[in-house]
Length: 390
Image (cartoon, rainbow, N blue to C red; front, side):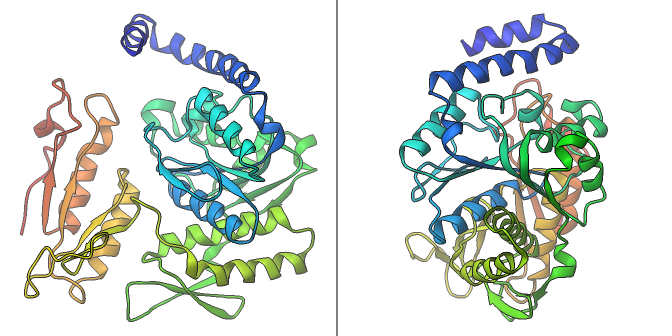
């Protein structure tokens, strides 16, 4: 079936295909919603979008809601939770899943008595109407936007407008939280129909003004919020920011006045010490020569090796990742070996030489793997600026 789809896509002109997609996916989404008896009608939906931090913020939001007694499922690029307890790897390799799987998983969440679902929403999924059949969202969160995925959308303006679709799908009286540090937040709000906008509770929290990330003698970060210090298991500033926005969207969604909101924010901040980094996001596999899972040594005490896995595959994310790791030298280790890959021909070719440049700037040794490349791709051409240095 997938082979037939590929042939059909090649036969249809690109512009016509782009026009057909939203209609096709919209019809399919509504059909699948009925097939699974409209599960979205029986669960509260919080939708989260942005270029960076969607997965981590979505997972933190779901985990915190579960910690305070609101049974919550979530669907992200990396992780799926269907019952408020067990997390599974997302094997679909998609952020916004096809509507069949979205509705299937929502039905399982409802059957498992979940009160909330947190959905990580991609611009492609929104533009293609894969969210149709979900009804209207209770709350929406916008994290940030960077000039990426432009090959798909055609322009940055189209990309931003696709993100904005989320906020035009919030139910009257719902919650809209947008990053106050992003110059694009108010542009998104300006696209919301006036009649809907006047009913929404809209806020623009700014982490750089509301929290202070403390400098510790360990990798793990602490932060100060409302004058109180809180310890975490998180090792990057951007994960603290993701945590901040998770706290904001929960507090805005669950409370009715400022006093309740502040009290809940303090409670959630205290619980943040129970959160672990998201799997595949700044995750230690080996630390100081000791494997995390089996607690066995892989290197001698004289030559301690640490291995960190991260999903970063966009320029800004990779830059922040490597800057963070570089800031740990020489206190924790002396050399950085960075292993990077990209999808094959035609998939975001623009970013491949940029990723190579970033890698060689911050790493002592950069290694390109071509396991995801196909026969039509030329890694030497894509990474023509890449070189190994020590």
